[in-house]
Image (cartoon, rainbow, N blue to C red; front, side, top):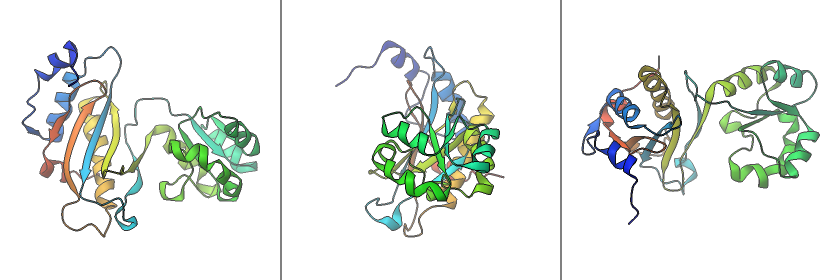
Length: 237
């Protein structure tokens, strides 16, 4: 059995691991236990009752966090002409078409989000083997294949903090909600946005309760259990 570090064991002492915390209590506890020498990421882990083997029970969407993720998001846009110019003006870090496709085919993937216009998807599609396994392939379901008139808005949202919400093969959703340095209210509001988008997009084929259990944790710290009734009552305004 692996041994935890002294720092980890000391942080466990400030938590009640048998308690189900309200969202506000959980955020306060996680901030207190995030004692690493870097600004730890706060993450939510939600176990669902879905069966990911069935297409009609899968969940894939995007959550816009009002306070962002607390990190620089490098945005790449496949676009041409006026759309490319709009993407640059909106703050995209890399903009192009065939030139970017060639760089990626050569092994370059130094970006966090890829966005494309529909007219270029025929060419971008050949990058599936490279981008798909890294979760970077533009996809209409995640709002990253967009019409030219929407490119500015989508780039600005991506720079602020768009979180892709999807289940893994064990039906668990893993999603960051910010940094330990954030104010407690900011983390709670980001968590609220995440839960709200999940509730709004839960698969219709899943009957009964969708979220079975949920935990909040930091990068190097222990996790705390969230009270489900308090969590599911969160609604974004």
